[in-house]
Image (cartoon, rainbow, N blue to C red):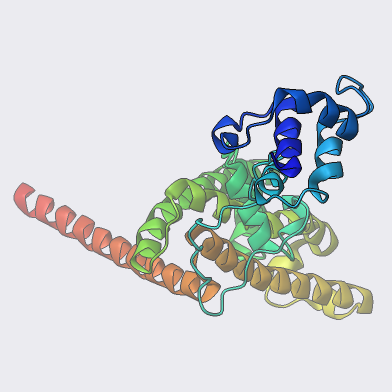
Length: 318
């Protein structure tokens, strides 16, 4: 019998591999076993210093039989490769033309990051999705309305008193702020869906409420203006302010800060609505304009319906 076939058979058999169907033609005489075993495996297989893999690789290149080489390539079994990612995952839709993807980075702090990372901040808020206490933001932001430079507010305070006036106006503005938040989010969901938006009313409420944060930041300036300028803050002519360089400078700075923050709040508001709906800030502006037109038309229609109803009831009574 060919010695190479016998060696291959002995190797397979001693290592305990299950290749009997592949080696049925390798018949080895029993009297050759001792000679071959001593020649090829001088150390017992039970010796722990010789591993199966080591024996295999030691004799793999010395035996030219294709069958042995095939068996050598099968040990040890190749581990099953696990792909790092699934190649069959469908591609995500591309961003809208001109759309800026939300900024990456660590989770933003909404009270600070809303100023310069509005999209990333709103996306983080919507992912967390915790609308509890969201109504407090418009309440706090609307309190600054109490200190608007309107003459009729000062006249009302003179007729009553400042604590009562502030309390009445604060309650009214807070109620209007919360009601406006729910109304605009409901209408904004409808008008946004006409333009392809996907935001819910709850998501829009969160986006609109957090876009009021800049107004909350500057709200402490409102009572400060009252303390600095008093009645003249509400008057058209300001002789005391105009006669003092320091007061004129302070007045100009306060007016400029309020104007800049007001404009930037509108920009943040549009970006927040756009992020909630999944489209650009320009579409958010268009959606807001449509919503404003709907609200105005609804109020006008309601007013005329009310007037017509009153006239009709009086005509019946007459």
